[in-house]
Image 1 (cartoon, one colour):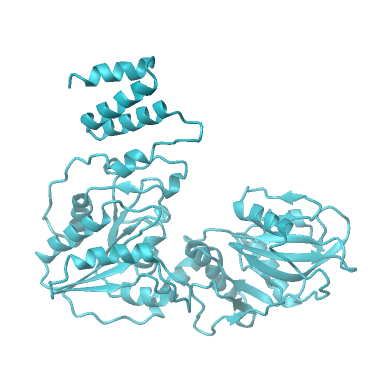
Image 2: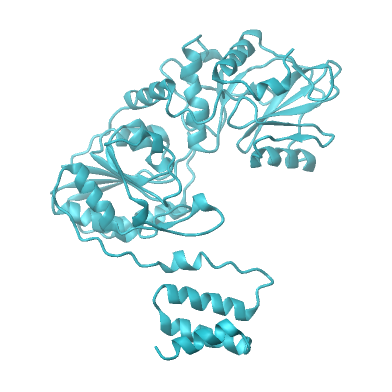
Length: 454
């Protein structure tokens, strides 16, 4: 019988042993979190990013829930209200709320103790590959685990050299194949990258030069990406007679044909600027799965992509040279950066300042990205880089109003935002309106008097 608190302290080696024994024995016994009795796995369900496994004792009483997200175990929940969430992970709390609300239900009468296998399933690609898929290669080095590998509809990649992951049974019991989170640097990640690159065919392109461009219409977007990419392509066209532009964005699960409208809108805006140019071809990879994306990345000469998972395929998997840009706060693969990539320096980035720091959009002069690309290409051509001005989207992202904000305060803060952008005329008009709302406001009076002479 295993003590549950010990599981939280397992290193990679112990986690591997746990999973291996789980597959050998087809079951496991874990001591109840609060009682001195053994409990057994009955059935599992995936909720968001979490895998939830129902445990109960021999008499099907004293049930509790084992919760996995990125590790062998991330938390547990007892219906009595006890929640253990040592890393304060939101998805652990989400599981508790779903169970309490009745939206996540389990068959409490299930008497099965069989563990059917491992489920490879994650909603976010980074965690799928570096918390789960990498462990296929890690565990397979010890024993053949093909018969134990399953997936569901949230799978980004399910093929290996020897098998394709099977679909789970509705009433089965499965564990996430997690050991330690974020294994993108170890030898098994190298194995995974090699497998993904070399077991994917190359697409054929006829152009003299092929470039991969990453776009995003949601969070963490380069605000000038449409105009910026258009100008970069135009300048590249003065060097190369024919170009294939491969545009990447949102990635779908396997067998998923849903459409991401925002990213496709960005693609259309860029492509439409070259509608009459026959020597520039466009390939839209938005909403494609990873198999097709890797196939195209394998024939690219260079890439430009964001510093999140947007650079995963061209940089980490296909190992092509490129430029990485971001908000200066999120660098997913920073420890893998080498001479094959150029990263936009922080001092050349203007980022939003919101509470969700990692999701902030940002401004970068496109000439900065182009010059970094020229350095990788080996060209001495360089463009003057303008001094970046504050973008209105960046400035107004700093405004935080609540239902208690008074009109004078709102007008005052908006006026200060326009001042930041250099528009003193609009700033003055708004501050005068603020003064009407708060005639005795000392700071507002000061600003009105200061700006009226400008």
